[in-house]
Length: 242
Image (cartoon, one colour):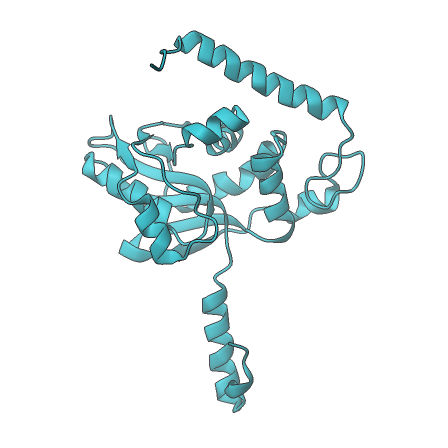
């Protein structure tokens, strides 16, 4: 039988894990989160590459998603350091990207910032919620109205349709009736998770104005198709790799 844990003890354990993570970062050798240059948390060239460059795409269902960075190079390494290596100091470095994206997505005072929720397993492993942490560093007031209803499988390696089925019905929302919201997340790949968040929020009576993410994976297919069109105009489209 599972024994219920006291909320105060759970919160204390979370705080102790966060303190331990930050203490280790001080005691152990450190390197740049973007390029591994030794003895510095983030070098100036890498910091410059994290300057917001907002882009907005429209995904299925007409949802407009604004991103502050492209998920590649330094940005991808920095976000992975935050998510996988406990480098919580990176949050303040990528926060401007999320804030810029949120503004582009239509956030303003009175509009709720709703983060995609962290799974229980990820929260236990890290001791912090990545998206919430970045949003706080960005000065965005977080409203945690989304809840994980059931666990989903790891999304890595799944295609677009597989991702959509994997997350379908996993989220629910409460306390959102009549609210206008902007959903926030760390990275968008296919948009399946954001669309599930939209479904849950609308079912709870919220109006979704848009979504904002720190970084977006490049739309390689679209880039390839655009390149193909250009090559066809030049008469050598058949040479484009598949």
